[in-house]
Length: 356
Image 1 (cartoon, rainbow, N blue to C red):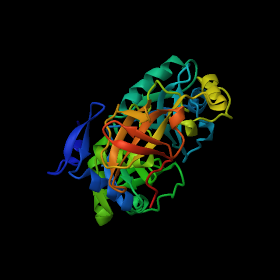
Image 2 (image 1 turned 30 degrees about the horizontal axis):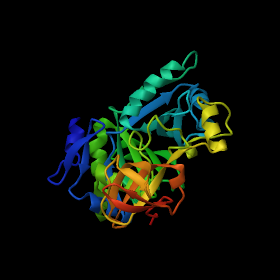
Image 3 (image 1 turned 90 degrees about the horizontal axis):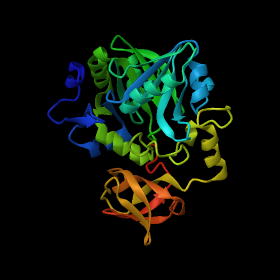
Image 4 (image 1 turned 60 degrees about the horizontal axis):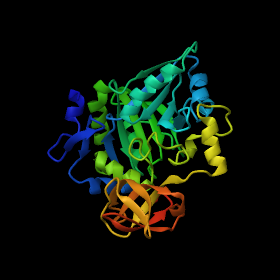
């Protein structure tokens, strides 16, 4: 861990740990309170434990468009999209957020996927003029999440941050540092990611905290996991694994079926159009406030119909929420099921907590 991250969020209330074996701040003593603040105002979080891969070169668009399931040609500068890379068997090799700069693409992903991505694409580059680099260690990510995120970041940059309806990106300066800002709403609330040189992370964090004032409080990984689960958004390598196809992993927004060929296209398309999926990730809203453990069995009557993949207690709802991989017969919204150790739940359409 760098000196910069050691100084961020290491107050008396901060709890350090690891996420996928990478040092991270887990919480600031009150993950439930942090998650509530993310819903009502805004939180600041260091997401540098996640992965970042930068693509450059004149053939980057063509190269990635031909392989990814997403329509990369539509990603003109300033735009972003959820992307999935299928393997030849149509299963999820890795999923990521992609943002288009003026002369580069930046992929944001789970840290293990950054390494997997750089290795995977080596197998498909021949004469294309495209290069990529895992910049996870050199490029930090400081996130501001919540309904007041745009106002907080705008004050820190001294300019109006775009109100992206879905995903987008722009450049700005924070604390005298060039920042690549990327926005998304995958957690049913605005999130703005500030990508800055790792050496400038502390200064950028401090500037955001200073301009954020009472609107902003620090949050750790645990709080953002609560926010993610309240939104019903699956996490890479937690809910989404390489055993799933995009349709099973709720990743169809990352697939463009009109773009033409891509790796694994035939299998991915067959599953969508023939409705052959026998299992799919689904959101569960529990009657009680005890979260099931990952791996807990989900039953419908006497039948085992699935497995919990991740869960938490929502402070906004006062109830447990989860994602689970369920068989087809249990997928209909409103279906009553039970999870081992947590009791009755209903299959619900996400987001479970609406944007404020």
